[in-house]
Length: 91
Image (cartoon, rainbow, N blue to C red; front, side, top):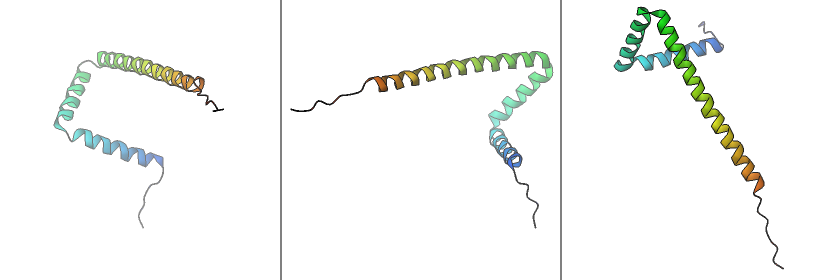
């Protein structure tokens, strides 16, 4: 009998481990990760600030894109509901 763990946590851990393996299988990605770790070790506070700024900028960009996409979807929905074609009866 095997002792297999069931649930969501082992699934998530497996997915993350798989993604990390794929990411680090490429030499370029290993070099980027090494460079980032060295930068973080030199000045952790500056690295944290830089990372927070990047995350904030990305979040703002994503929010702007989502807002535009939502507005576009609403406009398209309004256009579809207001342009109803009426068929004329031949008579």
